Length: 92
Image (cartoon, rainbow, N blue to C red; front, side, top):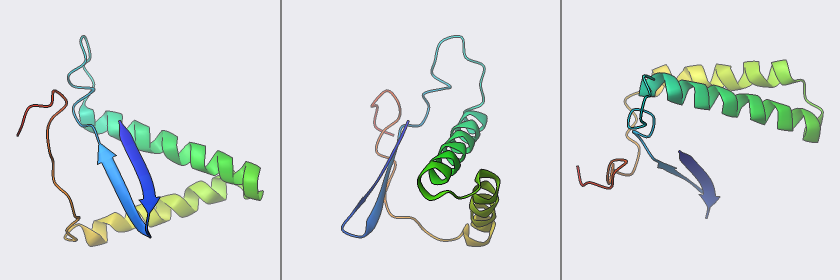
């Protein structure tokens, strides 16, 4: 689960990690599940941009993926925030 919002010119992100690996009868690698979730999100953004702005879906996806690939160059950037608990609300 992921929540993203903007407030006071700041980006806020809240993640619930472990929900796939904790599901019964689920042999999904959590990393693959998050990759699918992000890919689906990109498809929804591209679809929405086509409907609201008339921008080509394929071009939007290519542009988003180009920006996404820049993550390799900024892996050392420290993000604010901490992991507060796992999916079962047990302190880490």
